[in-house]
Image 1 (cartoon, rainbow, N blue to C red):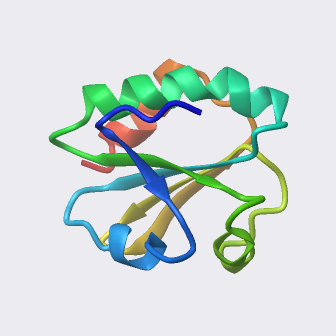
Image 2 (spheres, rainbow, N blue to C red; image 1 turned 180 degrees about the vertical axis):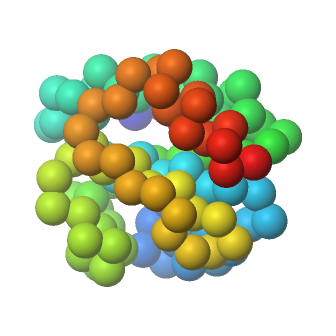
Length: 109
């Protein structure tokens, strides 16, 4: 997985600090072996670049960071969670089209 300068890499260690942003935070819970996650990855990177000054966007590998995935009830991947002021604001499970993701993120700005 390539990370752009605007795409955050979430881990169990940094997760709680990163979601406390004043901006909305979109986290893609994924795994390297997950087909739908691979299909979603370019959309997440594009959102990270497009919203770089208005929202924080990043990814968390559930295989490498099981504590956070368990804490937020991630049972299937991809799971997308938007946090607002450090609190879970919205959760989507499965592949979500780019245009739908954009609308979801914009309504949280």
